[in-house]
Image (cartoon, rainbow, N blue to C red; front, side):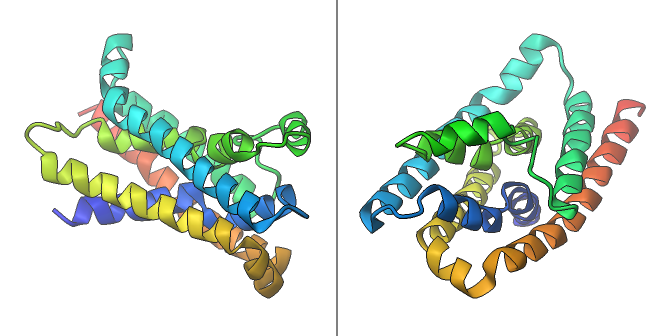
Length: 208
């Protein structure tokens, strides 16, 4: 019973990549008061949590309504995560999370919690696809403990993201941009391997 939540925690942690929020949040809140930073961090995590919960509860019925199999979605999720992993490994600005135009717009906004922090940095396409993939096969009525275990794992990742944002300025002074990039690249290697495994599993299950 613990194996699935633990695996999901690792995958979801690598996809959300809380460490990558450190330089982003620090830059977007540069010069702001401590209370503002805390408020933006809490609001961002709460909004992301609501979005992810909606996908966890309604994602599978939506796929069924659209006639999309979990195997097809697993393959797409794997390919999407491969792109994200490549961006992380080569330390490029993530086009799967936000465009340069969106990033410029975010710097002009007073409230950066919903956009771009909650979406697309925390609850981005990769995170939403991962939620659908893992929660889709779970039947809440008969697998309540597993469902709650997955929710707890997601909550731990979001809690880590909140802590990273609260401590962003302190952590930036310790690890710097280079340290954050190194951590991101290592996470990208792990995510890339997991993504390829998703594609392999999806193809195998589709033809069984």
